[in-house]
Image (cartoon, rainbow, N blue to C red; front, top):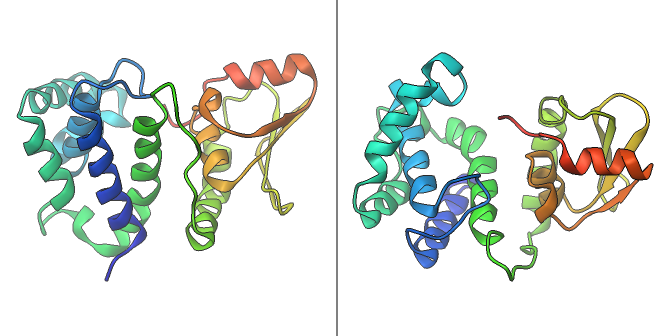
Length: 211
């Protein structure tokens, strides 16, 4: 049975393949090859993946990622498509859905939106609701470095407070756009932003997201 994570995995692999190994991405300093290596290491090398969240381990994790990055690009794409071994927690359906749905969606847009011409992806209502629920549960973490109050709002009026403070900036958009905004891709989203001019400028330049 297909899941959101499985679908996003295959879409991301297709985007990486179409772009080629040296295309730019929205991940600062990374080409599509670098991004592909990151995705493989994250699932297949638990000893290196810790460096993505634990700073003292970052240097080792980056070294291993660079080792994977020199492999043939087609090999990296095949590893992404097939996923980790059955021994990996990422191979479990529940873990895959929880850990990879947003990860693959965001990185897919990192590839799509790095070019000069792009338009927002049309998401089905069920998947949009899935992304909204993920945003609701992670908004405070993603928005913790906002210098001002930050509210994220869907066109249907549903809202979530990403950061308490004053003045308040309200960002309105579809769930996928809001999620990308909260992950620090502010300049590559289609949203409406309301608030004091200076506060809006601060939010646009803020280091939002997990990093």
